[in-house]
Image 1 (cartoon, one colour):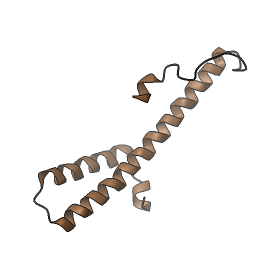
Image 2 (tube, rainbow, N blue to C red):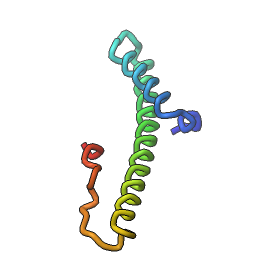
Image 3 (tube, rainbow, N blue to C red):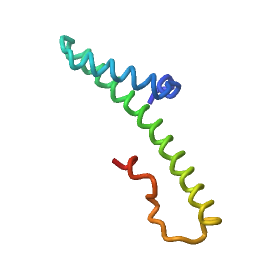
Image 4 (cartoon, one colour):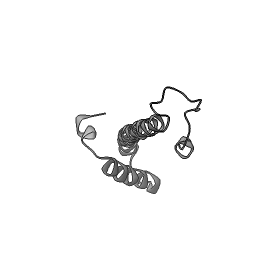
Length: 90
């Protein structure tokens, strides 16, 4: 990832990625331009993945804190660790 990419927000990276995919699907570009678009798409996908992984970590942390509070400190219980997270695992 380049320094410029790390400053992109999720929505910015996603929108640019959508545009890159649209251009690639439309065709009509040279091989060199297509390769450059593909490489940019890979970079943007990595930025999106980075943001989503961060969001996932924050959600997991919040859920763990909530479960620990519900357990009275989290020292006991036999949770499988998946409570409320199934939708994110899809």
